[in-house]
Length: 267
Image (tube, rainbow, N blue to C red; front, side):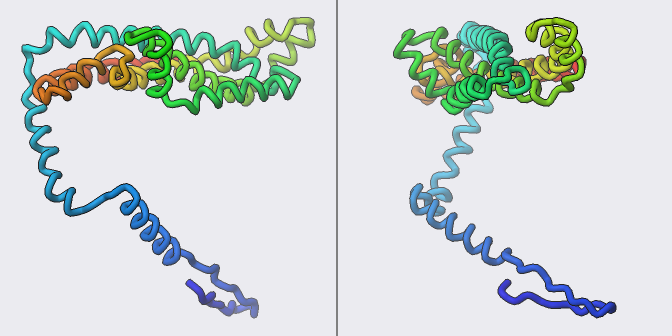
């Protein structure tokens, strides 16, 4: 670690081995883990003694109460609906803003910086936090979750879209503007065909992720299936929680497979 070994080559030149910091890095990692465990109150003894409770809860969840299914369909459908609408609205609105944020579309650095900053600020706010804020504005219900998903989709899809716009081949765009087309027309016919597969693929991936995220928005009163998950966990009805999670798993699996198939066709 501290000593650099030197090798003598046949041609008379000498090569010094680079210093290795593996041991130092391991020591720093161990120190960081110890400090983290102390700050978070982690105790291995508690984990060993109370960890078995996890398997007790898991055992009950693996025995789902199928009689509770009739109470799950409506919240699940509500979750899918607000995920779909929020994702669609966010992705659609992000496209014109991504155009304004792309350096190669807008020549003004100040304008593009403002819109990139907007995307960054919105993306920084966790969806759960924005959903909680929306419940104070719109009240408890699906509308708050819908707005939270919309904001996340807008910032997520928008950022990836303006990055793809900046990395496109500008040949067709420049050719169209040179014959008198406006920037909007040149973007429509010269850039959109290039970024459309990426945009659709990103939007689909964002939607399937939002279905999972929407499941926990009910914890802050933002509607959807999270409301009954929170309720049943509070009542320690883990059989019902198992039923909810099983149906949610099947729904997410179907959406992911469908989304993956559509993305493969788009590509």
